[in-house]
Image 1 (cartoon, one colour):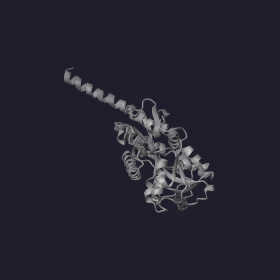
Image 2 (cartoon, helix red, strand yellow):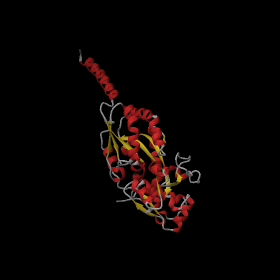
Image 3 (cartoon, helix red, strand yellow):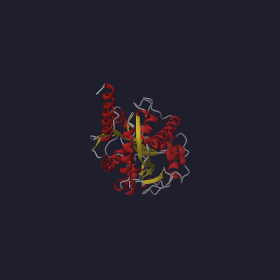
Image 4 (cartoon, one colour):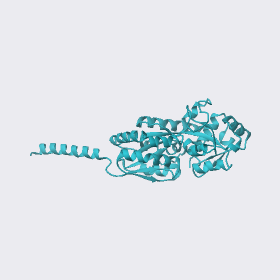
Length: 325
């Protein structure tokens, strides 16, 4: 066999090898980074979809809670991973919309990730206790204008912090950061507890985090940031209240890999997620928590996330909420 012929045969063999390797992904378990702690909205979403998603993938999914810095620690772990599809991230509104808008020293940007989908939308709901005597957003805004009202959040620079400020601003409260006292807590559960025990008057958080409190009557929803009603929440929508800008104020969960994730890997994730989100068990569990299951393709997911970032960044700059340190 002469050299040219040998090279030609070798190239064909190499092509077959590459095609076989491509078809074999995934060959081993996939590490799924959850950048928030157990029991939170991201963790609940990730572990609920794990079974149908694992069935679609055909390999084990290793769920890893890598927490800290408002989702940044886990996000950096995924950012620095090899872009081969074996480390993927459950990206969240806090880690990839709020953090980039709020924190000047964040060790990553949206360009450091390739989003393969957003699959869950969590409307934001504002809620109070029945004992507060507050029955509507008008009641709440009146009390805020009187003074002495506090709201809780899962921490400075969190979605809950930004949400309350945005809601107050949209309802005409002047200097919302001064009109109501912000009481940051260590996590969303603690933020809800602060309202339950009277430390704070209200909170605005993901519907999924409030669903159990609303269903058992411990908290009363005053509004949801959607154009349509949310199952289980007997409250007016942002559209009902004439506040369409608040429809952009939603939580979400998606899946991302590091920048450089190959097209073929992203395509496989699209197919797997289509199968997983069609699972009736998954949908019923998430919808019972007030979530909306909406599968976005990579382009729509990227446009959605960047659109949220743009809105949040403008609000942060307007209100002077940017964290420089």
